[in-house]
Image (tube, rainbow, N blue to C red):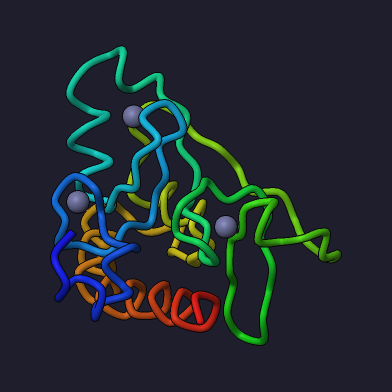
Length: 146
Ligand SMILES: [Zn+2]
Ligand SMILES: [Zn+2]
Ligand SMILES: [Zn+2]
């Protein structure tokens, strides 16, 4: 590994497929961290790949599928059992398969997406809010990675 990479701790949180986006999903079958876009691309590619169980990426270590979800003030964080370390007050994280709609993935990631709007409304909402959502997710990571 090149020296300059050690100056970028967030690299450990990057998607292992495209290596540019922040990973938010962990594929248990592949042992891979994926961003939302690569999750759709990799697991939408074949019926077999669609059977892979995926979970939100652990916000603590960015190296394991999260099993538990915690609320820290206004933010949610998902942690693997190792990072949760027996902490109470968690709810269980849902694992998913197939190619869920973006709204379902966001729900898995603890993001409140509008549920009653039409597909067009949702697409517009997503375009407006995705940068902020990804920033919030990254914020959680920054808190728990240090
Ligand atoms: Zn990616
Ligand atoms: Zn997979
Ligand atoms: Zn962890």
